[in-house]
Length: 174
Image (cartoon, rainbow, N blue to C red; front, side, top):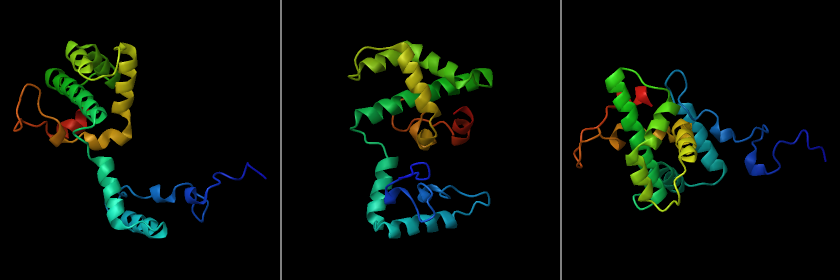
């Protein structure tokens, strides 16, 4: 058997053309702003693999929403909140931001971050490991869906009706 030519051995990993994961191609909006082709490819993929739309909707909903009872999700959003507050503070005070790694280091070294870390059952605090983990999380493109105005209030405004950080500012600072 010639392994050099064979990229993937399972049929569900390849299309008829032999490309890996063809359903990932073209799902983002194209340059003209028309995503009809992307929707068409998604519908074709669902039909081809016999996935009904209700199941697909549930999978997408589960992937995008955060569970309020899942402590890992809560810790992730807490870390994002501290990071966004630091970037927003830098943006207000300096008119610009430090690089992301410096902002992450400032966040992780803060006393407030350590207090929040101790409220979750994660074991001993390792500063360098936390800096690396938060930096990887913040720079991961898959996490961009969480950087929305509805998720982040301005620091120091308690309550459910707190003032939100505008989306255009979030886009600049994150």
